[in-house]
Image (cartoon, rainbow, N blue to C red; front, side):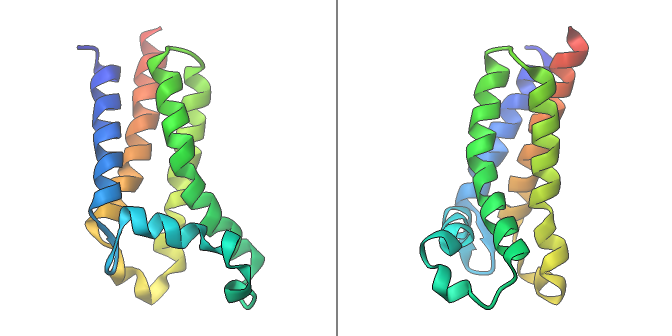
Length: 133
């Protein structure tokens, strides 16, 4: 098996684990996803929050959709540079929780870190595929 394919499989496995393991306090990944998207359907509850924070929350949740699209793109063998840069950018975006939570970062659970690693692994898989070419 090619190294890029093995790393891609690890990335997908890590992403799936991130969805089912505890991610933040008592929330599993799938429920943290819903909370991160909640400013979209309950904006009134977030009116006191800065807009940049809401953009980061929703953007972080939407990286899950990006992950699926990038993984499919990589499997099909196209646009590896796009996958590499987009996955790297998503990794950095998703790491913002470590900074923003400040003293509450102790509530971050293994599922969060595994989920973030899945994006880094996806970027690595794209890098390996690009290097092989």
